Image (cartoon, rainbow, N blue to C red; front, side, top):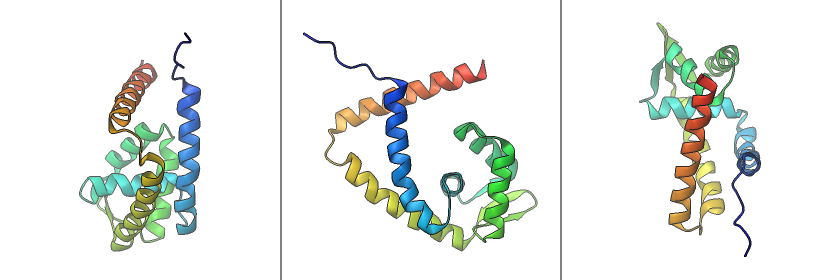
Length: 143
């Protein structure tokens, strides 16, 4: 009897790179990058408006990137009309809301193709494991 394969960081990384490459196929034609899509997602999830510092902190924590890169992304998004900012509060514009909808539709189609048909119980276990791994890694980073 052989042991079941062990989940490793290499497995997680390979899945992340493969799905990231698919995401790039959705984002690139729209002229945006992954970090921009994260900002759109965060704003949409928070009623389309967030305090700038709070938004920067959330992106920095989630993506493990430098605050300067997030500020640069926000500046590009403001310049391109996806966002507006008044008194330190960043909001989605109608163009930003439309961009989010287009991206979400493309991601939904990909998700259906790559997750569709996998047993719901397996997806639930994978979700729990990945959440636990992320929480532990974040705790290690904070130590």
